[in-house]
Length: 246
Image (cartoon, one colour):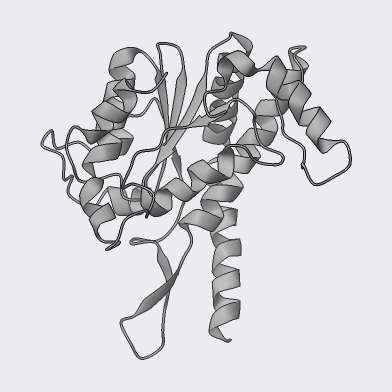
């Protein structure tokens, strides 16, 4: 079997693990997001560097929730050169506290944090500060990795230990899925692909629950289809008090 097919089968196998082991947690996540929206609270998402790609996936997105707000910080979006500076930014203790303190996050809101290892300071601080404020924290992580690595935070905790709800992306230790024959080299990260599927599945159920409660569909349509701009303008207006990125 060639390496490309091996990777595709690995993605399928990982998704099967998610389907068999994480659906209950995913249902709970959708319920948390929907209940917060229905009760007039706000939704936020955070991740640093490649983990932050899923934050981009969830906001201002066709088929996505209009009231999902990203929390972003300079240096955490692979927006610096040299790129390895970004790794130092996510290890800065206190930076995550500052990001939360300067955000609109309040008690009763929900913060979804993605981190594969869950060991670095910025995500741990962000989760801890959010909990102090009284927000609920949902964590998407890789438990196989997180359980064997040592926390870099002075409190010794890892991200999943600060969560109200944990979802495991069911990936392999270190994220790269395939070992190339005859070498120790591993290739093919799965966290972005699998994480995007997990979170979009949660978004689908969240939207359904919100609509079932009698509220308007909090979902973007493509601005590249006829009538899309008009539909998006209407839904942005309906949820304007819960949108902080426009």
